[in-house]
Length: 143
Image 1: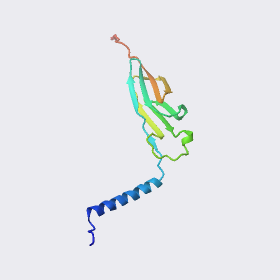
Image 2: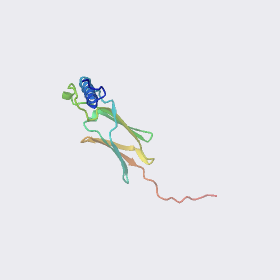
Image 3: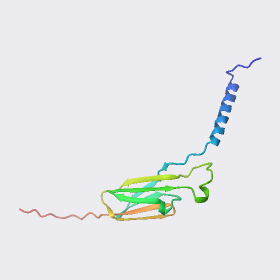
Image 4: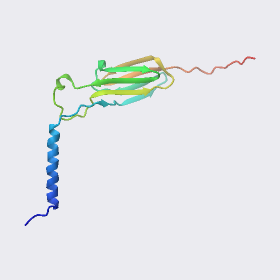
């Protein structure tokens, strides 16, 4: 007796065979490197400064560039695998690798001349001073 071709078990076997073939092809294909990622960032304000913090785990100081121009803070850089791991084949990749860039417009009272940055424990901290607004000034009106 001949089995019908549209039998549910035949269909399931066909799908399982296709899935198995697809998995075999995927294992042979090299993993593509990450091309860009966006590190998480916080912007906080205190009475005398703005503080920008970016999470940059595994990024070295010499691989980061921070530039402030026209009221915008730009942070760029690149991260890769540690030296001994660079040649190894990556079987699973959940860590962000490759180039990154973030920009943030700072408030208008940011003092771009009072800026400093530190990189410690995988966190880049950029501190930008705030210009103090003058108090109330009475203006004399002349004749």
